[in-house]
Image (cartoon, rainbow, N blue to C red; front, side, top):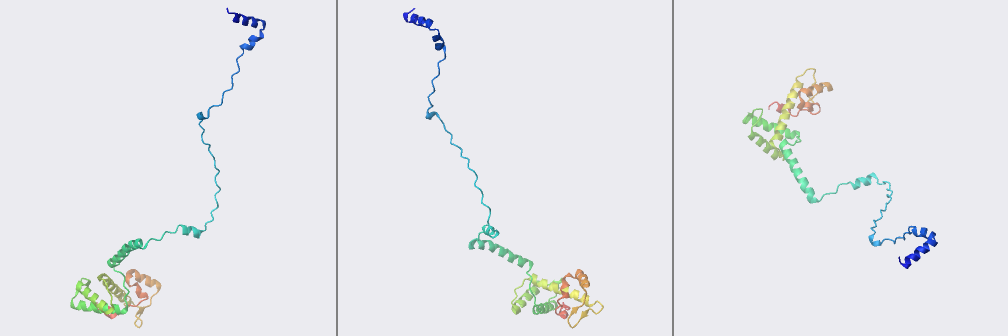
Length: 218
């Protein structure tokens, strides 16, 4: 045993409290702060409070102005309206646009039709194609009317239907016909009953039949 160890043991024997002091667990040293390089800081989440919404103060007129459709350019408008106008024109030609007939127009139509019936004859209940072409030329020369065959035939059929209704009322009793005004005196109920059997002659209630003598010939 070395002299140093012997001296230590001897010293501990003389001072027994030293053993308890030495047997205690040494107090750990404080750790040094970690390096900033090893720290991964996350960005702080900033919670923003919602902004108070301002009250709606837009007037109805202002809202309508905001939603008003933007006007299209002239080129776009032309490209849109041109096909629509063409379709409308073709539809009128196909269906026969309603023509406003004056008494002079109707008298010319009746006289020409009677002449064609007497010279050429009928085609069923109507006229031949050549007769319609002649009627169209006469109306264009006298009145400048450029009509289709369908338009002229509609006027022809309407006059015939009105004449049939006119004859039906004229043959009734109770003196309902006034020859001076070429009108009929009926109650509203009688007119409604007449319209059921003669719908195309319903205008006789307000408009007299033009030229009944000529209508009787065709």
